Image 1 (spheres, rainbow, N blue to C red):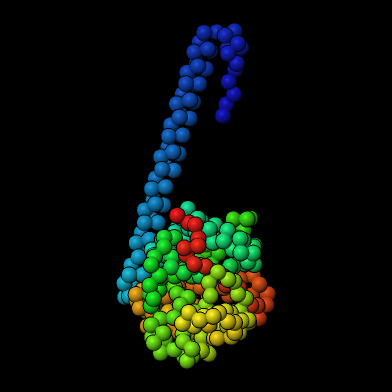
Image 2 (cartoon, rainbow, N blue to C red; image 1 turned 90 degrees about the horizontal axis):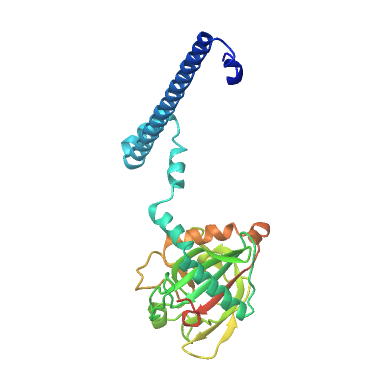
Amino acid sequence: MQGYRSIDLLAELPIDVQYQELKEREQYEQQKQLLQELNQQKYSNAVARGRFLLFLINLGMIAVIALPTANQWATKVTGLADVIPEVLQSIPTIPELFERTERNSPKSQKIASAIINYAQQKNWVIRTGARKYNIFYVRGMNPDGTLNDNKVNEFNDLRVVIEIVNNTPRIVGLWEGTDAPGTHYIRNPMNPAGAATIVAGRQYRAWKMGFHKGNPNHPALVQTGGTVTVTRNGGSPYAGYFGINQHGGYDYPRNDIKDASAACLLGRTRAGHAKFMNLLELDADYVNDHNYTFYSGFILGKDLFVF
């Protein structure tokens, strides 16, 4: 850009020189403004083209996900036959996104705080720090924290995993479940004294990583690390090793435990149980020691003050 004289200096020059320089200044400012407008227009056009391109990419991804033929074509053309399924599997479903939102809701925070307050009052072991997971079963409580009538033979309890970081408890996993036997084993108990029910209001350290009934297709927390206390048919509580594992509920209906539990601790759905196990495999203490024994606390829903 050419230099211009100051206004004070310009005033000392002849009128024709002043006029010529002022005119040049005006033309320069007009050109500068026009250039700015052109650059802004180019930027806006580029943004619009970028947005449209992203729209086309998203549309293509939807087609690949929704249409098997499009998926096959994409894997053939790109050579990503082994990658695309993994990418699609990593995309969270709408229910999963909703589940994540629910876990971080104020209501979930209240449930987490109520459970930890109860555990503190009971002087239970409470693990703190990243990826140090605390397992709880809450009898007769719905996922929204309200109580139910705790009917026999229903998945009407909660399986909850809580992490405490910076003194703030948060739910990292919450599923429908049961900690009581179903009517099948109540009527046909494996023990002549009756079906066992784990005693609530207590915490036990008794579970290690393993497989339910030795089935490699059914990962579970198995009761090989310590004793638990049970009652049978309302009799006196006593402790022992009873094979009370934490396993899945085979996707059975909410209102029918069927033969899923003789006394075990269940998450109702296969998918939910898989997430439970995957989460615990990341537990900091388990990662350091694969022989780690997990704690679990058992609470009567009516003893929690949530809502």
